[in-house]
Length: 383
Ligand code: GLA
Image (cartoon, helix red, strand yellow):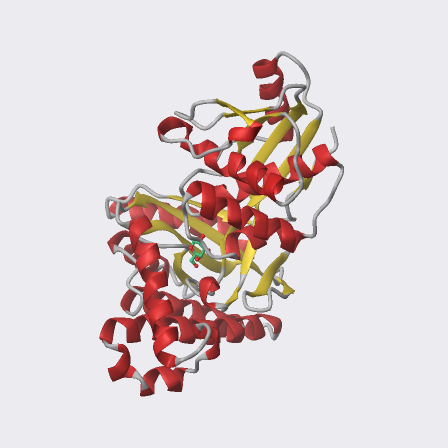
């Protein structure tokens, strides 16, 4: 976490380009309360945009060029002709997110013209708060400002997702891009990834969210994400449904033999997780916080045993939270490292975050734990 802000992004732009920026954007990261590994099967997810994010400062260029730079350590700046936007490798690979967005807008008929964009971030990269979706959304808002347009959050999210697929090479679902483009302060978003409808869900003031970055990322993460998607597609095909959202737990149980043990367990996770997400939203709306916490615990168990995307460090962090009396604790995001999310009494958020760090250190885990709040969507910032 850094003290980055739109003002620091603007100051960096000035230093880099020797003139003032003319466009500013802020885009949040996201957490996900529940509904993990279901977005690419038309499921229900319950993410929230958060109060940490990516800030972009930009100016139009007379030449047909895209110039990109970021304060992220070890990231090269990039200059690339607008008619030749292609994937970059190595220290310039961070630029695939913004250049992919510019390219996808171009292909959709929204050619921005030359731009120089400088990024600063208060989000830690690679921690599971979706800095990638925040980079994409910040870029999208800059492009829209340059063109004097404002796309609906849903269209912007879909263009950002396209950029991630085609330019970053990550076959992600739609959850992250939706969360950062449609977030509302004080609310989580119950998103139906089949109809793409969204219902903002107020977060009671008595509860707070504590995020824990495990600091680990296991090498198999990327390939395993694709394998999970493929297993789910196999299950849907064998169950003769368009996506697992259309299946019931009973259908999955009845097809156990036909699916085979691994695919059966993948499907059981997805179908039960979709049910849990609906139940969680209802429990929150009814103020049944114990029930919501119980559902988070069940989500973690399912991700661990059936979907097999947890790891020792994440399991240890959930156990540490449980030992501190936090039932609502689970791994969050793609898995194989990354982070956990905790639902805690608001008054104890800061002390519980500190207690998690201490207990983790005693087990040899250097983690970073802090409360996050639900924030608004990506948007232009007035200069
Ligand atoms: C990553 C992807 C999302 C989603 C989660 C798992 O964050 O980007 O689309 O699939 O993993 O829920």
